[in-house]
Each structure stands twice: as structure tokens, then as C-alpha cells.
Length: 459
Image 1 (tube, rainbow, N blue to C red):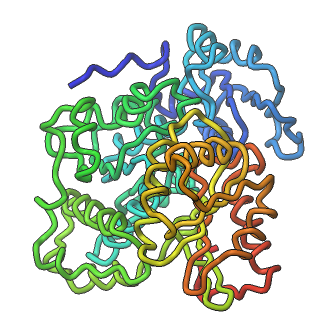
Image 2 (cartoon, rainbow, N blue to C red):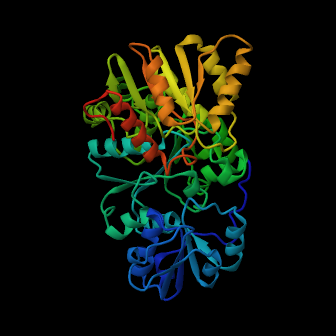
Image 3 (cartoon, one colour):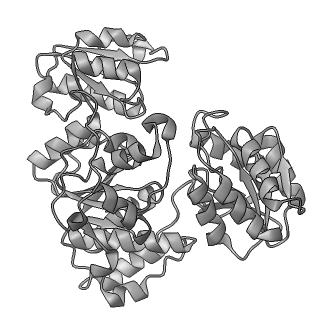
């Protein structure tokens, strides 16, 4: 097992009671930051100061809470709650952690849930963590185990803690690599869906990304982390092999054979189902006794928004929103899921230094089955890689300057019976606030072109 690097200086989990009577800083004022403000005030902090690079509307702050844009203002705080999007490897983050105690809302909440003996499952992975954690919560409910689903999926853990919604329930937490990096002492149960390089601008390099991603599991006991086959070898480099469990060891054969997710595309999603059910078994759910109910819950489960989700059709062409696909590996999974239908792929986004050679090779190998339409910034590199790999052979590549142009180009050349797939293989922050805004614009353009929204399509 490769040793995990030390966490940034003095970053650690603290208890809510440690916020009482002291000055608390909150770095970042998104959902996690707002939850941290609420937690600090509820714990009886003597003062709360928010720092965000964007102006904070004073009207959006509770009475007595101050705000500024200068990170140096946090040095006077006894405890600083850092939001996940802010990398602890940034120079100013390292300097702050040398001067005061820095923690995260996820770390605080998980420590409190452990103290209160709330059964907790943490689910992470480069891709598949949202679907897998949602499936696990649905399967637990079907097996008679009330569950609450939270974390990176949308509801900050601190809000779940303060609202008391996890009392008497099993907590299923989706954990991002940003959150996992700051939780070295979680000792509950875990599930790992996949591993591939991502977010290298935040973590610095591939090795640090993998270590950070898996740090949340380093204190887990033996046979406590379900690992998908694709991620097993890599996980074994950073975790104790004794901690890892194969899903096939925990899911009853009869139930595994009966799994038919009617609304989820792709073999990778069947793998996500198996990981989710294995995690439920780790939690003590009797899957065999509730096999019929669990199989029905899996069968009825629909794709979460922006995850290989069919949204509209125009004639015989289907439009699929896969905007949460931010790595080359996830694009390949989407193409595999849609085969053998002809696909017009719209790809490209913010350049974070990922290698697109493998994706280019796979696109060329598919011949005329995939037509590529690119958008900046990574689209330029991907198009060049495809042409280089093709070695002069004709390839269907169309470079465009915007999503509007890309959608029009995709529709103009789409094959009847085929799919127009928006699977960027990169984040969208170079042109949009987030993937949700990208997805909304994609849907708007498709519907404006005359497509009809599909009944029950995820939004």
C-alpha cells in the first residue's frame, strides 16, 4: 500500500462544540459555506466572518455575520471552515492552515454522526457516485431500512445534521474528491465506483488525486469498503487490501440475476447497481428477504439529471444530456452504453490537463459510428488528437466556436435512429457557471430546434 501524504498542516475534523465561544471563519459562501455559517451560529460561535472572492450580499447574511474578500481576514479566527471547492494546496490555504485550525463542514458533520452512532455509508468514485449513492438509498428503503441521501449530491451534511433528518435512519453520503481529501478519520462503511484522473488543477497530479479521493476510507475497518472491479487495483495501492470487498461476495446470486434497471443505460450502470446493493448488505440490509422489493426499486430507478439522461427527440433522433461527464473515461462509458446506435458526440470544455489520446483512439476505432462535434477549449485538442490518430484517413470531426453552433451542427448531420449526445469529457466552467447551466442551455437549444421533451425526462 502506498502511504498517503499528510493532510495540509493542521487541517482536521472538529466537533461542533469546539465552535462555541470562538471566532469562526467560513471560506466560501456557496451551499456548503452557508451551512457552515448556520452551524457556527447554532454552536454558539462568538463571531462569524465569511470570505468569498465574489461579493457577498449583506442581506444574505444572518445578523452579526460579517464578510470580506480578503483571505488574510481569516487568520484571526480560531477555526476556519473551508468550502470543498477551495483547494488546500493553494499557497494561501497552506499559509492559513499554518496560522489557525482549518476544517471542513463534511469533516465536522461526519465526526458528529459517528459520535451519535448514525449508520453511515460514504460513496465516492470518479464517476458513478451520484447514481450509486442514490441507488443505495432507494434499495435500503425497499429493504425496510429508512435512509437519507445527502452530501455532494446537493444537501450539505451540516444541514442534515442540524435538521435532524438522519435520526433513526441510515445516512448515505456522496463524497467528492474535494471532500474526501479532508476526512482522514471516518471509520464507517464505504463504496468506491471507479477511478480515473480528474480535477488535476485542484489536486496537483494523478497520484495526489487518487490519494485524496481514497483518504476518506483510510481509517475504515477490514472488509468495510465495497470496490467495483475497475477500481480494485488502484484502490489497493492506497488502501489496505484487507479493507476491500468485491460486490459479488455480498449480493445474492438470485438477486444479481434479477437486476433489470429499465431506465439506466450502459453496463457501467449495472456495475453501479451491484456496488450499491453490496454496500446495503454491508450495512446489514437483508437483501434476500426483500429481493422482490429491491429488484423492483432498481428496475424503477431513473437516471439522475445530467447523467446519460435522454431529454428530447426530433423525428427519429434522441438527445441525451450527459453534462456531468467530465473525463474521457466517462465519455467512453456513454458511447458504450449507446452502442450500436450511431452517435453525434458534442464534446469539449475547460482544459484541466487531462489526456485525450485514449478517447481519440476509441473514436477513430469506431469508424463512422461516431461523428464528433467539438467546442472550446479541450475540443481543439481532442479534434487534433483524432486527426493525428486517424493518420490521414477521413474522420467526421467538426470544430465549432460555441454550444449554439455545435448543437446546430449536430442536428444538421444527425442520422435517423441515432443519438445526439452532449458528453463534454471536461468541466464547463470556461463558458458556463456550472454543468447545470450548460445542461439548461443544451435543452433550450434542442427544444428551440423543434425537438419534443421526453415524458419523465430528468431535469
